Image 1 (cartoon, rainbow, N blue to C red):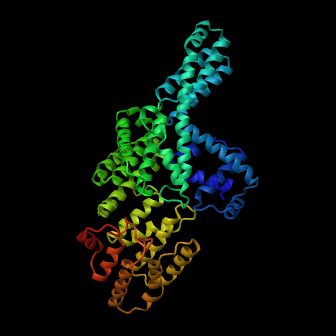
Image 2: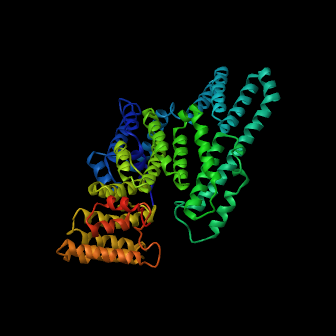
Image 3: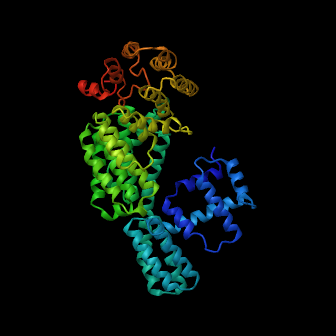
Length: 516
């Protein structure tokens, strides 16, 4: 369970270099008082840590002469960080701009500078209307009414009476429309739990999802009256495409057409793309998944190129974690498609261009597969270890896959002496987390742990690989190994060991993808 201290550490680690520099240079006064000095010491100590360690932190602070209550300093620091981040992003966030204008209007109103306050509200209202921020328009409407009453402005009062009430009702209707889509998204998201790729044993979840995906709100994009509602509408159609692809739902091309419609809509709205780059990148990732699921693998190159070029030309100030995460989703889905098309080299080339970015577990697994496929085993090991060493419970199925793949990579690196120990560690983890159920995986671990270290020739290794391949082919279940995935060429790999040929040569010769 994460503590408040962990959250402070994670906040600092989530900050960009520019945000940290801004905090140190502009977020702190030049002449520090004692309290401010110590929270900067605390910031530097947390920033230097790779993994949060309370005991190590206490020791480091004591050595630096920290004499104040640490918990109090943590509270002071998190407030200072949030204030600095708010100031840093005040001009880059649309919501931040509107909130600042409303805040300025409230300050001016309290200072009895009501005309100036009215001007700030007018700017906030104009921006909110342009970007369909109806929740702010309701707040602005209330402040405008208070101003008109205080100023005894008869013209404004009459305008509010004649048109303002209707406008406020319209704003309320728009807000309710957005809320309805949001609530639908929340229910579907809660049914998916950690990931839509993990199908629950409770089939009542499947029944409820079918009902929700047939909701009247999802029949036509015209029902989504605001930009936020449209985001929910198209994201839900994306989730429907996932449902069809992963859960075996009845095929429906309508949702895929909706994803194309969303990208086309955003490409006509330059202001929206500029203000919400993550929305456009998410739309491209939705379309990428849809194209792969609907057999349009060859479209993935063009879609990824759009996303890559858009992301790379964004101003640095817009490169926040949300935008980076959205682009990573595009990258992951692109690498999915290239692995299916038997082009792991394209994954490697694409990653070289964005290697500085932190990938998701799915991204690192794709790159581990890609590097493994082209014989770059050290790079494959670096990627797979980021998943195998994951400390959270997120995507345990993927962590299990990584635990098995790491054994094969060490074999390719000829780390024969290490394999018994690594095999034992993987075996313990898989048993503890109930993932060592497949007979092939047990046999593969047994080979790496016991048999391989005793073998004195490559010929004996080949004979064992032949036995493993026969075992896999004769498996009673279609999925007789957690490694037997479409993205990973398990059977071709076994054949490549038997025939002493490069993996991709075998894969392409037979046109094999994964277990096919």
